[in-house]
Amino acid sequence: MPGLLAVFRKEIADQFGSKRFLIMFTLILLAGMSATYTAAQAIRSDVASSDGGSSFVFLRLFTVSAGTLPSFVAFVGFLGPLMGLAMGFDAINGEYARGTLSRVLSNPIFRDSVINGKFLAGVTTIAVMLASISLVLSGLGLRLIGIPPTGDEVVRLFLYLIIAVFYVAFWMALSILFSILFRQTATSALAGIALWIFVTFFVAMIAATTAQALMPIDEQEPQTLLANEYFRMGLARLSPATLYSEVTMTILTPSVRTLGPVMMSEVVGMVPGPLPLSQSLLVVWPQFVGLISMTLACFGISYYRFMRQEIRA
Image: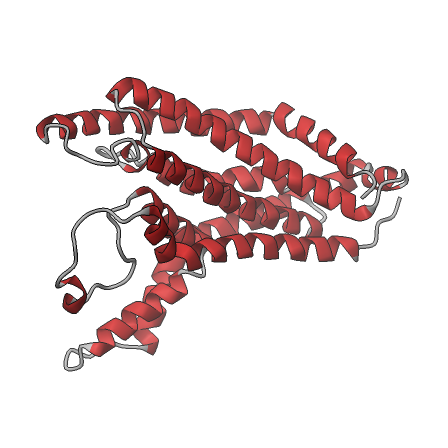
């Protein structure tokens, strides 16, 4: 694919040298350091009171929320979409506004090399950012609690990074799509922010209201409660934020065995303890694949629209 490497290198240089990247990197790093510090204090108190018998202590650095400060994974779930939207809202219409897109395509560079190079450069930037922040926080947490991670914890953190990259990449692909659909950068940015607000704050409420309207709970029939809950969960999982939270909760908290209602018949005879990694993956495999599919589908739509779009000098 002629020109892909050139576009990729140019976009990588632009992303790492942009002020928006520095702002988002600093914001997430500071938020993560604050969350890790408060989590480490809570973990040290818990380990001291339990005589060091707790398992998967290192993973709790990323999931424990002490006081009013959310955990690191919660910060990524909230700030990650903003980072993805900031990286792609002017990917195409910004080129139109500057008049550089037609000049780029006048060179021996295929049109698909432009959109593919921009997306791959954005995914690489996201991966480097999240991986570097996670390494810094791991070093800080190791210094504070003094307990190194086990091999299972390292693998679980690596899987979390993969799903976090795809989660942020979904919002970047969505912002690239808006930059193709709207010629004004302000319009594409506002459309992305509006959709982020809707998905983050309103999908759960709409899912609960819709489930109650379509499958009301009858106190005389207990099975209606299960039907209502399963229907509400299915609607909520249309949101990438819900998929991200369920995957991260299960991967980074091995004690989580199910994401739905638990029946008494399922509890009887159950051996207490954390799930192995393979079983945790089985619990959230549909959510894992669903989030990756949503990201690729969103980029596929962007690719299709860009390839059919008329470009004039």
